[in-house]
Length: 250
Image (cartoon, rainbow, N blue to C red; front, side, top):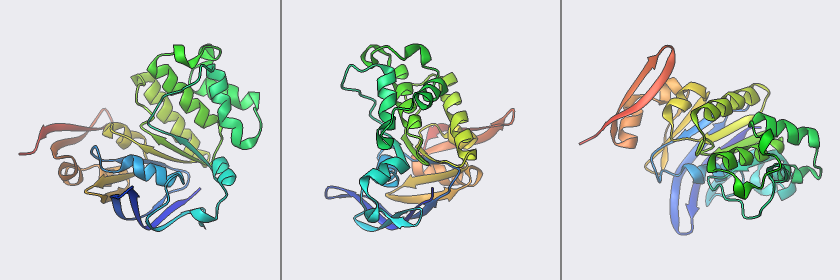
């Protein structure tokens, strides 16, 4: 599903967070949204998920303006994983994952089992989420989003709390879902993960899109250093891209 933002201004209350956002999120690709703290990554993701109407401009899903979509239709089209990982009820992991099926009015056991397996949490299925570690709970919530089977998956810091093995497995899964035609949009702090797994990168800075395009074009010292205020090392090690901060700029 294509998401297009045209001359969009996004605000939270009286505070404008992003100006002049004009971008189309590519279908069937992993798009990584990066930038310093407070750059507006979460706000942009909420807009891409249809959860935040623009103060100005237009957001369209598959060519249809956001305001013309019924909430039930949007719920079937977009799966959203927020940065907040809290679960306020003592539900089992399986029951939480099954919540992803609500927009479809079914609890397809095969889809739920596949989502549990994709996140390597079958053994946790019957345990209350309140008894799980932060990383385990994060994997349960990702599985809930997967169970929704939406053509657009929007995930805010999906690797937060995950160990390296599960973070790599998650992004390998995201790439596979993209090859199957799904559109994936993620906010990330790990620039090396973005360089390795994303097809398209959006860099936010100074309340605007500072750069967007293929990772090799966006994740460069010229773009990253003024955005983050640090010198950056952008290199390859054994064929893998590495993007790392070196020192703060004077």
